[in-house]
Length: 326
Image (cartoon, rainbow, N blue to C red; front, side, top):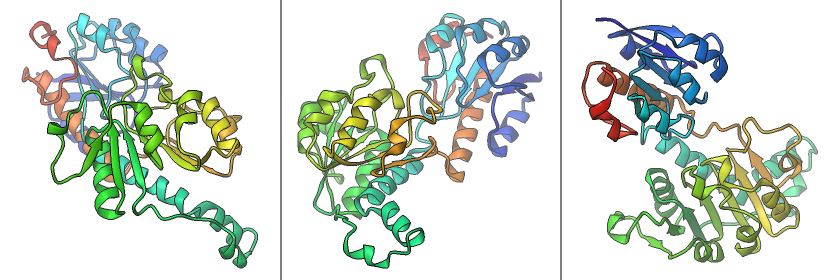
């Protein structure tokens, strides 16, 4: 029996090869929820990257058995609606861990060494003597505070402890000391406030949940050390961008490295773009060639498992399995 799977956005060929073993692949004509709802009427599976898979899309697909999320989170999929409709949601946890961890380390190093200011001074202004005035700092022996210590947070800790000689503290209400690797010396703190007061660099690695919405606001930035560095490569909704702008503009924070925004894409008028002590990238931390291949293959493998009637390795809504569509 051949199935039909809709691929909403371009993915690595390795993922398409896996899907093609059991399914005919169709490419979405227009990757918007409104158009998808018109196109998914006869599909058995959907492979999606960033397009929202809303209840309306799910309800428009009476044969749909599985949604595969090309990534480590499922916040763009209405998992509650999928579960109610008997639709499995699979994803690719750990697929982009190395990519995002390296991007995070790159942002903090670029800010600490003032790379972009130095590049502009020499390349544009031809000011070689700027080497005497541009400030930079060493990260060795500084304290990195990780908000969230899942796979990516731990990979960042590994780079910064073993590669940069940093001290690492972390806040994560779902993690205990016993759950950490004894070869990775991370000190857990009791509250986000404790972490913000102690860290020289703060990096977000928490999921986008209602509880975490704008967890970094005016008060939280005020608690951070004067001259601290802030990194966000998690989800834009975790940060009050207006409060961050004010903390950077006032000199409270030395700099910020941002890969994610709220909304996305960010508005061209976003005031953060006007600040020279901010480095921005277009939500690309996970987009190494290696990570894109892992995300495509893992999500495709999950879709194939469900279509074959096999319990998938990475199921975001395990409670659906016994009442899933067949």
